[in-house]
Amino acid sequence: MTMSKRDTYTPDSLLAVAVEVFNERGYDGTSMEHLSRAAGISKSSIYHHVRGKEELLNRAVGRALDGLFGILEQPEALSGRAVQRLEYVTRRTAVVLMEELPYVTLLLRVRGNTKTERWAMERRREFDQRVSELVKAAAAEGDLRSDVEARLATRLLFGMINSVVEWYRPDAKGGSEREQVADAVVRLAFDGLRA
Amino acid sequence: MTMSKRDTYTPDSLLAVAVEVFNERGYDGTSMEHLSRAAGISKSSIYHHVRGKEELLNRAVGRALDGLFGILEQPEALSGRAVQRLEYVTRRTAVVLMEELPYVTLLLRVRGNTKTERWAMERRREFDQRVSELVKAAAAEGDLRSDVEARLATRLLFGMINSVVEWYRPDAKGGSEREQVADAVVRLAFDGLRA
DNA sequence: GTCTATACCGTGATAGAC
DNA sequence: GTCTATCACGGTATAGAC
Image (tube, rainbow over all chains, first blue to last red; front, side):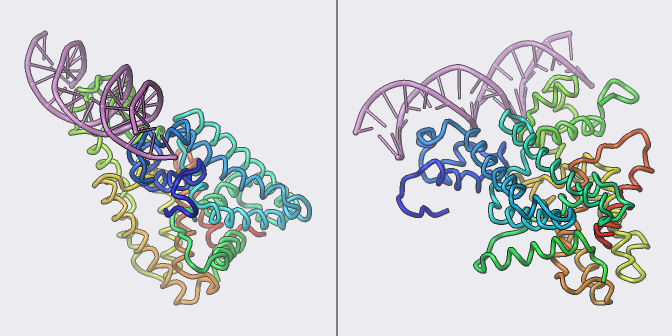
């Protein structure tokens, strides 16, 4: 993490550093000492910018959730044949996940030990719920296979998309690489591995 | 967690309790105090059965890894058309994951903070590697779609399978339910969501 | 095999100087 | 805005009685 403009921190630039460490060590495995070393300032200086460790978590997962819920408000997610909307949401979720990688990664890993974590899990469930309805609608329109239950299909679909955080690391190529990965996700999810 | 025979602990029965707590709170989020409360004995009594917290982690992930590598030694994984072997490994991985749910869940969540965790990650990569070779072989035999890279396909396939730990909870029905889930995983992975 | 008591250290967070 | 010094607490682990 390199500072971009000033060598003093804003809450947001500090957040960027903190989220990296959280993802490397896990939230619970990260101490304020770890954060202070990564940020290059003392523990107590961190408290000048944020109220504490949990506020950093809160800001991070909030940002991830904003990105995800933003998808559902796009016109392409709101009208048209359900299977098309589902395809759009699938692709965009994969892209947002890569664009906001560290924030979404953190969101997907919260366990529910604190109030913030439980709130994040709740909102995430809401998102899953909304997509699940899309899957049901597409099944009702006859565009999805009928031998796998909608709820189960949704879960496996998300499992595949979300797993991207386990290995994706952005490289110099930027957005084009992200579109390639998103394409692969959509192809495999809808049409499978088989030739 | 209920004790089955005696109301004294063996390392293994204690492990079963510990792994539940680890999965609920995360390994780093679990203190010996948490474990002692869940086991119904004092903190110091735990040290009579195991050397410490990390030994519990070690035993747990070892058990998960044994289950996974066992799949690759089955005759069905060793000979035949690659796509058939891949299908077998996919189904069995899903089943083992459900049979050994708490142990595999823990394995999939280690972050690499301790020696034990790094060893577990290493062995897990070996397993992924072995399956990746199967995917490559199946692609070379022309049985997998050629417009998605083998490495990427392997990762997404595993992402889908592994995500089962996020929601699967065993119920009274036992094995039949597991086979149903495994069937759904294989169907979606190989033939996709689309009707 | 389990307990109470305790050692010792790292934790999140605060006070107050510069 | 950053620092050093410090606090109260909870962490892992051990000693030794029963």
